[in-house]
Amino acid sequence: MTFRPLARRALLLLLAALPSLAADRPHILWLTSEDHGIEMGCYGDALARTPNVDALAAKGMIFRRAWSVHPVCAPARTAIISGLYAQSSGGLHMRSMVSLGAGQRMYPQFLREAGYYATNNSKEDYNLRKPEGVWDDSSAQAHWRNRPAGKPFFAIFNSTKSHESQIRTRPHRAITDPARVRVPAYHPDTPEVRQDWAQYYDKVSEADADAGARLRELEAAGLADDTIVFYYGDHGSGMPRSKRWPSNSGLHVPMVVHFPAKWRHLAPKEYQPGGRSDRLVSFVDLAPTVLSLAGVKPPAWMQGHAFAGEHQVAGPAFLHGARGRMDERMDAVRSVTDGRYVYLRNFHPHVSQGQRVDYQFQTPTTRVWRERFDAGQATEAQSLFWRTPKAPEELYDLQGDPDEVRNLAGSAAHRAILERLRAEMRGHAERVRDLGFLPEGEIHSRAAGTTPYDFARDEARFPFARIYAAADLASGLDPAATPRLVELLADADSAVRHWAALGLLMRGPGAVNAAVSPLREALRDGSRLVRVVAAQALAQDGPPAELAGALAALRELLPPAQNGFFVSTSALAAVEALGAKAAPLHAVVRTMSPQGPAPDARYDSYIPRQIANLTGAPVAEPDGEGARKAKGRRKNAKD
Image 1 (cartoon, helix red, strand yellow):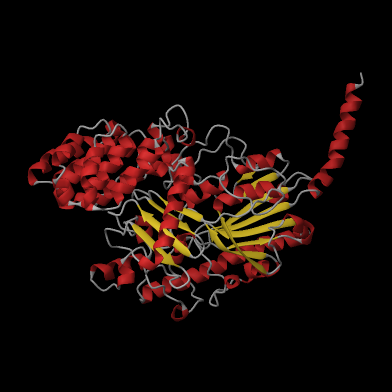
Image 2: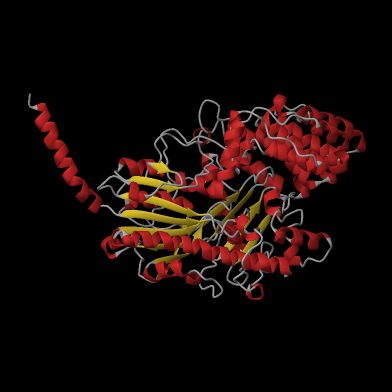
């Protein structure tokens, strides 16, 4: 008989308490923009017109050394939403798809449990399967003003105005004078390049205007004094050799934070209005930081460092970056910086920085740059982007070489710095259990019954040290390593054998001809991914008598219906790399169905594009509901 009055009283007390609960926690607003670096007034760029973010920085603080961790949107957002490096969760490769580890959640889920109304307007584009209940609203209509009365909010608004696609959209009403832009040393100084850079500056101004509109909404609602604001870009500029490349030019981003007086006690310890911080911060720090601001202790599995809030910790001594597959083009690069020096380790030195990613080649700068290189008109600095093999190791001093074009890896004077950063890169890969050292298909096959993150911590399933040692040996390009690589072709682990075959392929005719018999044996390897590499090596650099057998092996491995996505895409890449030598297979490719088993519909566009690249004939994407959904996602989630 007393239940209803008591329940009513409890409800009234809870409702009365909600405004005070909200008052005890800050509102948090993230303003994000796409494909632009630190070309902003508040970062000292005199050509930039960014008054809104400049004003935010004048009363807030900028981080001078912020890195994205991944130089393209999908893996970068994967790191943000999870607090994990994408090579640790398994979501490194562009538009791939994996599941989070057991017990792991996306950071908005923690915020919602803590009472926040969490919204995202509107891009997601994660390489992680999204659990139920991540956002209160994630759509073009998502807005903090839609929250229930009394709730604190966390809101993201993303601007696409500065996206790569916008710097090449014509016609364009030019504002920035192309004659005034600084053309970096790696780009040719041509009218096309200057126009692209000038248009880029104009588009950054438009992104700044979007941020200004959101800040004015906050002011008009009387919430500016109650809201902590972050502004950041998702990776470096959309210009080639920034986007997709994990050097400082591709990872260095603007990050501005403002803490109103009411919430100054939650600010970074070094926070001063109008100040600058030299703390090293990166995107894996964002999830633990926003949880810390909300009063939630970040879970131990998150790999970042909270730089604000009640759970903030000391910053790291290094920042890390990584590049994996970009669309249908495979690569493996790791980078690390201490804030001054940048070290890159190229584990696929046989492919260039400028592999033909179709989306990148739609930018005039990319095309004219490639034309000049092919014509022998590129300078040494401009040639590095296209040349193969890449140097296995690169080291740049940002203080004297901000364009990162003078490789100091061979400098005796910088040997200690190189070794320190190399050791940090290796140690970090082991600490996060970097899954990028597996062929992408094996990330999925080894995860059967579990998740990539979880199996990576099982030494039996993922003997990291052995696999990394094979990758390091293979990609070092030392000819003296050939006998050891031949031995590794017989290793019990398929990833080790894969690296051994790659190492022989990377070294060219000398190594391949010294390993003809074991490579021929590898055409029957239990791993079809190993077979692909062995076939390419024998066809490319083996004795003429080996060509027919190698092409026969590739022919068998091409169809995705029989081999699955990862084997088929690897075989297609091998056929393309072989050029005229693989001409007998072009007719097979032309009539090949692109349909076959794949982990997710996000992969569906890659094989059709590879077929079109090889044959010049457009191929329809696979049919089916999964393909239609993926096509819709791609429309809303530009590269």
